[in-house]
Image (spheres, rainbow, N blue to C red):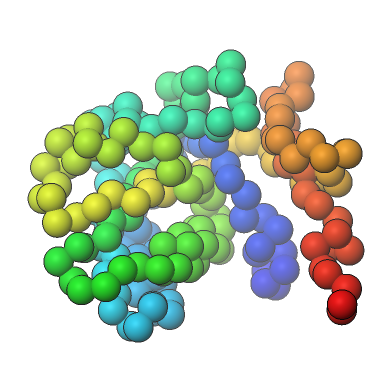
Length: 191
């Protein structure tokens, strides 16, 4: 798969084949990709907690909110939930901050997942204190995001923005539509 196809196939998937296993080795390989990415001042302050076990996955799932634009949808139902998670944290005991490291590593891990035949969704709406308790995570680790991973079972279609409405939506067949602005709209002319 060429890089453009890899990027285009990398969508925010929210429904998965929950029974499709994601191995601990696969999760470690994704973190290894993150490890190799650029880091602000090369401080490497991000730390990762991995889960591919059903009981822990259910507990993590209970701390997440899904798809803000789909108000009537509570998230994936049983059988469509992620089969793995990577909890991304900031180790606050290391001086400095993570600046843009979180975005770099999350996108890199998602591209790695797509390359493995998987998909994922970056979740920022997390009940962080509840998750901290579930994970028995020491205070020095600030929870930033949860990366939900698995084998996608939904179709995501990229389409042109109509007017100014950039909200994603689902049609009656369950196809997830994601409006994207035109390239010419994103590139500013020289002033």
